[in-house]
Length: 189
Image 1 (cartoon, rainbow, N blue to C red):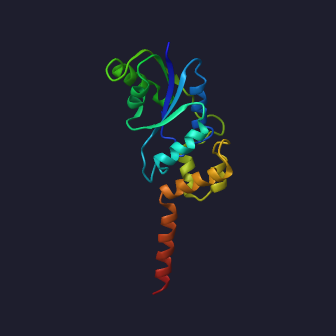
Image 2: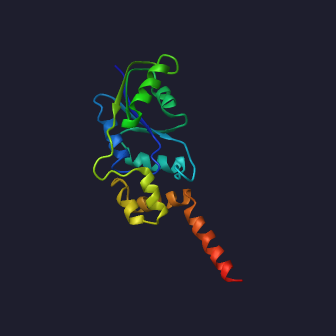
């Protein structure tokens, strides 16, 4: 019997308490082949890490799973692991109903599974921080707080690099230079 477990995430940036928690749920599905699919979205507001950089970090953090980029969300992710006897899809609590509806609607059309199980990854508990809050820390220049929320599977240098790449992807370093130049030339009058 072929059983696969998967999740699809933006993970931009990848958080220790949030994304790693979901990963642990995926690899914890007994007897299943684990897969982590990452969004290819890239923009300065919600997806500052370039897909290739995010994939590089994710492969180091999510070592026990097949990690790959996928364009097209859960539907495309499910196509990549189909056919299988069973698929277990790990999703955030706010997405359970939507993913269940879509998975059943497109099963035996775009992909093929005998059984589909949707598992709630659970909510943010304790000190879990969202990627949105991580981007806010990067925007505020709070590197120490940012890197403290990253995986312990990353080196200190890799954590610093993710912070820098997040800021660059948000065009923050460029924005600071532009603001400084504006002040410089304003004083020049």
